[in-house]
Length: 397
Ligand SMILES: [Zn+2]
Ligand SMILES: [Zn+2]
View 1 (tube, rainbow, N blue to C red):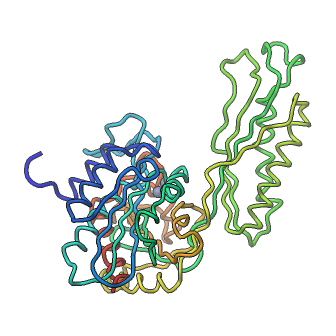
View 2 (cartoon, rainbow, N blue to C red; view 1 turned 90 degrees about the vertical axis):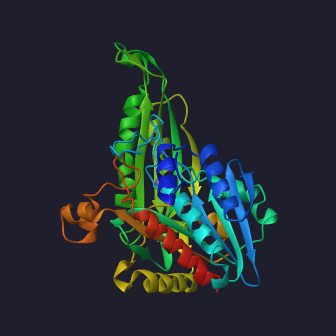
View 3 (spheres, rainbow, N blue to C red; view 1 turned 30 degrees about the horizontal axis):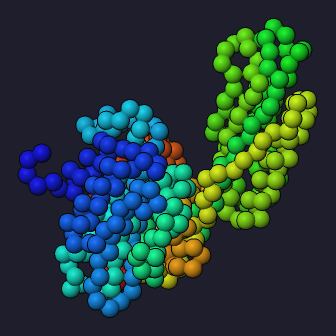
């Protein structure tokens, strides 16, 4: 490389070198370099690949700014010049932008210490997509090695017009849980099903029956989603396998609803296996436990005001609560207030030409997070840096 690396170069480099959850070695090292260059006392390897840095600047609150760092097992199809160089791995959720914004905001704040007072704690978190990273950093003593923050700030890029931000006080994102169901059949030759218990057929019935959980067992006023995202069985056409495995993702906004949905999934899985004559009941295990994200109203009001001042009122939107999830609330532990907001990443040209009039119609037509064509407008870097900088400055004054 010739000349000094700009923040845009830093972003493109991260985008080209995505790393899967809890394996963010290169990303963490690059972020740590940037934090150190800005004068932060930095520790790496917290909870695996987590990195955190601190900048003390007189009296005042401790404000934590957080970025997640992991990429997804998606094959990139954006055609960008700086597309992923790692086969089958892509920054399809925009966490490369979050890392860039964190590095950028820290460098702006470090260079303008006369505009704020307090302690800035910058955290690069591994493993958001798997709900492992925040808990791993906490378990490894993040808040023992660094002061416990008084307020926590985080942001996420998503499909909305570039240079806009979206806020919501209270419940913004939902609880999520992965459920794996292992169905035990009795395998054999494909020509003799009468001697077998075919787990493929049981799995097929189970998938359709699970569609009744939300439609028939959850009240119309309660939000819930049950998605069977993965279905795996068998090796070839003429062999009935011994097992089939389904992996489900549950989304809810209320603990009571979540318990009801999970109980229904268990009951239906067990009954469907019994109906098929499976030699033993299914094994049902849960993982990927995301808490609901409930923003602190006072903190949101402060950040929203700072964003209106810098971006203009028309660029600051009100968001509905979403069925997407985040492990960010683990850092708050139910005690530390936090604000989390969205930054629009869709180029205006793409947004304007998407079918429909209302935002929720347009959303269906633009490439969203977790898709192979998710390509944030490069101008998002500036918006995300400014959004995080001004939010932190507002909390630190
Ligand atoms: Zn994601
Ligand atoms: Zn994400």
